Length: 241
Image 1 (tube, rainbow, N blue to C red):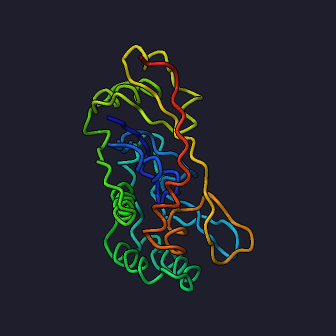
Image 2 (cartoon, rainbow, N blue to C red):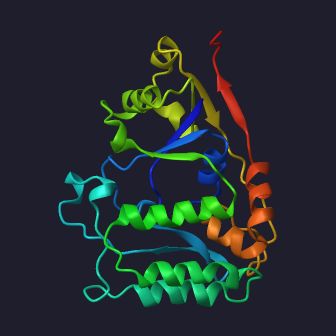
């Protein structure tokens, strides 16, 4: 049972879906503190040949005391953002081969009365994973009632999900106490994703680490899945025999 854990980012990048595709279950960290100016309410797309953030405005009052699940998106009548959000996608991707396949999803999504950042992001994540034919089971961290923080939290979640393998991102090397995982017989693998290149309309030099939206607009879902998986580099940590 390979389990991975990730925050519910907005318009996630290719590495998010690579890690998800290489696991049996993904636990979505909805119960950790919201982080300002990160990827929880924004991500990067290609604008005039350069990376640029696109995102949704969230209510930041007392945000240090709130989890991601607590964060609310501003209503359009209070902070107008929906038209700009859609126009940004439309203007910069309308000439792409698969624009008409994916743009209607965002029109429908934005037309709803979005209030929860978590729900908004998860609708996008589920949609993208379906388009990429990733059938990894999705679990909310809060449903598992975990305890601890940082490395201990990840280990506790892994155990509650029945994992014998935890698939970490490369940054896990900076904070994970691997000896504890070995004691609990949870093997640790690192997903050292190597970002692939693809035919990218609108730039002379390839721009990496954009939202998977850019990949899908350029190549479509079937080829996108293959490209994402081509970046798989998994490093197994230690001897668990």
